[in-house]
Image (tube, rainbow, N blue to C red):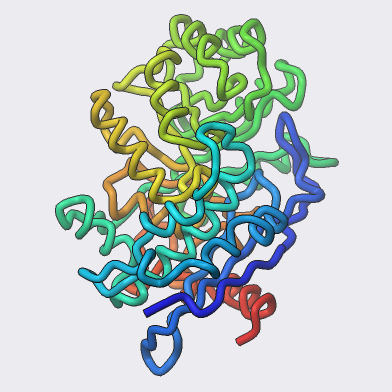
Length: 389
């Protein structure tokens, strides 16, 4: 067997929303298709991948460095003879040939796009949903029937006041979510507190609301916000400062007793290990949000989970960033604590299968081979428009 073609395209997820650091009016994603010579149901198996929101399309890196390495590789170097299938670990080695250690930058996103497509193809070749394949290979066969999901929203945009914010959160509750998240740090503290209190009056308790500063604060501002947030008993306080400022997180954790969430902008096993070594995070309450796509893909994410285990952390402290089906499969197959969801933004890449509604804050996965993209009609419509039928 072999990869007969590998393609990439850029798609827009532009929106007038903003968080504390960036707006999304020019946001793009890369979409990849890995075409194999394996036939299932009369058609070649094709795996699809894309990057999570918040990082831009990686077309230049994909075209100039990473796709040529795959195209030029001998199939014997990336096929597992024992499984008669693609080997994502060998493909990762091919992609990263002649790359220096460290300096992760945008290349971690480009590699993650291909990694997602490869895992989609691998599971389709085995005729299994990805989450069941992952459970069988890496979790003693234990796949979760349902996964906790929370609704991420509450972005800033022109003309959006507390009434509009409340209406948005109300729609999420009506859709079956029990925990919601809003942005902070993009307005004065007093305004953000009014927004928080408006949402709390709707959801009914701090454990049903998380807030996200997107790395905006220095230590003084992070502590000031922490002191103001403490009495609310929030689900978590996310990315208070720069994700690589471990000292800031350690100092904040010593003063803020509630859960802190971070990690979505760490891109390697080494970053994760340093976070756990130096950021003062607490195994009994804090949340790790490393994104399996933005950090070189699932191959690297499995290495992160190894480090977590070695350092005494439970996988259920992991709730990945991304809000898409790939991360959902990983959460279900590897026993993570949940998954993010974007009910109203970043369509069609965010969200889950058409026939799997959120029920009481939980969601089931479709029994569809691969990641399950084919069960999400709006996403498949876009993919077909990019690559053809």
